[in-house]
Image 1 (cartoon, rainbow, N blue to C red):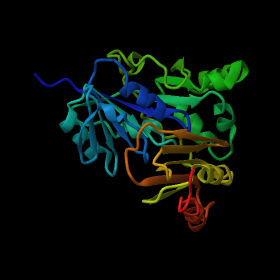
Image 2 (image 1 turned 120 degrees about the vertical axis):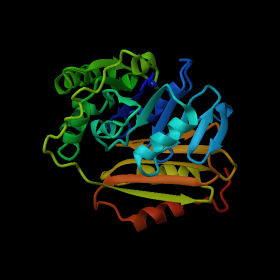
Image 3 (image 1 turned 60 degrees about the vertical axis):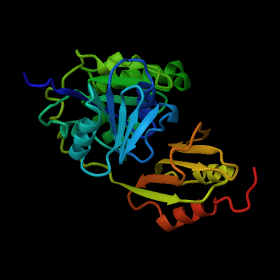
Image 4 (image 1 turned 30 degrees about the horizontal axis):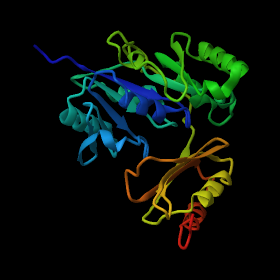
Length: 309
């Protein structure tokens, strides 16, 4: 008998919607499945070191049978590496926040794989404003349009009125999609992994003639340690053209941190471990709107030479 195809679910949604938080929750969950996760965004999944049993190149194997692999190049090659290393029962692809998840999912149409309709996350506090934005609104609405499931996130921040408005938007933009809510990735993984989950069907027929908004991404890495408060100030002062920024680093006292900016929200989080001794930062902005040299210089100025906490 032919082997059963491996279901592949793409998790999409605009920058800062909570995709990584959801993926982390699934990896740490007690679902009893061998899950493979592909991520195509720098530093996308911070894995609990206590779960890691092996590393083989880009593939990290976990004690619960799950595995995580970065998409450094071709998605098809990454799928092959993950399937060979882990023999997963289900594969999740965490799409970039500026990607069309249906187009990403279409790339999983290969022998032995069964693409499912995308799961799209939407920040309940900001998705209505994003959908109306003249620059990214078409992308946000298109991300929603082909979803089989839309998860409204950050419902604790949104409050009742904005949550209701977000739900109305999703009902208009994705009339055939199921709608769930989540806080901090707290969602039943069965909704994403169930055998009865929606197959992709015609969801990949997503060509609407609309141009994709253009973005620049600036990646910067260093062996230095950094002043957390200085980095927080730099991230807060980034211009409005920056749609997403994040970084992982260690301070002079050895404590590991992550710094995030999504829209106007800036957050500094202490991490339980450092997955990499190097610091890594990425800035995503509207095309042509930032000066890479100024970004690099601002980050370098935060290096913790002589800094004491």
